[in-house]
Image 1 (cartoon, rainbow, N blue to C red):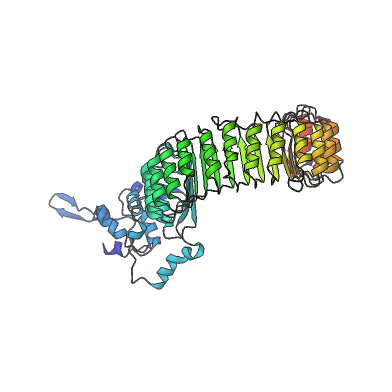
Image 2 (cartoon, rainbow, N blue to C red):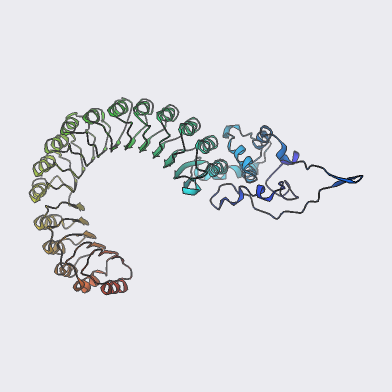
Length: 568
């Protein structure tokens, strides 16, 4: 027993070799791989001759005394008195039993030896002084995500600076991560600040409650596809983790209104929340979260939820500190919701707005949002099927601070609306557009691109016209003449021909790095020379589905444009 108490991780602990009679038992935990935090170097086993006592005609073999005969309670007391973290890591490599016992020891239960040498204390504190407590990061994915590995992480990082960030994605189908693994982390890693659980169906409330009780410094929590986690765990997080600043839920059907109300009431430092595809969340949960007077939320993202106009009304009234707002795929929100949100006078600090796949985005609703958000600088509108030219121009006029406007798949927007924004609101927009994305806007024509190139060609760096079927060579001529800084151009599925590519290639100041011609069926082998010339600056070329370009031409391009990634 004295040898166990005096164990220092060297050969004096078991000079005769392994303490196990069965070699498989001795190596139960050793072959976990190079990523494991605890490590004990393997060594050759020595042959041990057991003494026999001759008594008459029979041989009697005396049983060998082993430390394994001690009960868990005794081993627990021994382990928590080991002089250093290195010793505890070495012991954790002996067997799964020892590992699990060591992982069950809370950090505050470890006995500090008052007679420890200065060298030992300095050795223990090296990593802490280097990066501060909780600077280590660990990630487990797929088959590597098991309770045993989590236990090893908990033991191995506790004395080396402390675990600060843990990410678990997927789980081992046979021995996956469960609440027992999170318990080990909660006990051994009180410095944990960020936890991410993705597609871990075997982890339930018990494990997350242990994290809440043991990791009071938690700041970021990300849960995705965790069906066994409910409001009970979220309430525990809200009560114990007062430093929580970022919260994200996705596809967690059992997280609902009760948990959100607790977060809103108790987590006064929360600054960012994202809720996606959580069927248990309704208007009551959003109202309970945002109506808290102590909350300082600056980023709110609601996606694929069944909330109604009431939630948008709450945002418009209580979102006084919100600067970034994302509303994506809210089928039950109507024009009234956006109108009320804009007239709530609470979004005075809003700077960035993203709205996608919401049928409530109409001309009237969007104009109201523009008037109610005087500091709005960035707007991204995606798949707004009921938004027309009049609504777009009214919104741009009302949003007096607007600097960047991005439109995607807004099919009712024509060149009239785009011209209206450029000419009537040009002074309000950013001093020269840098990135313009018009992908999927099928009504956009060459006139729009020509005007854009004339007005903003001196700053334009990225132009996306993917799917704009009315764009032809005339647009490339305007781009070649005016857009000297353009480095990324996407004209996929446009009516571009070889002549347009030639004009682009002969531009004096063109500096294209990325060019996408995917689906341009009128571009043929005749563009080989022009593409080779453009290849002096190109780093990426997409010619997929360009059926008029033969394989031999592609091979030639690959040979000459050796530094360019070519998709064909």
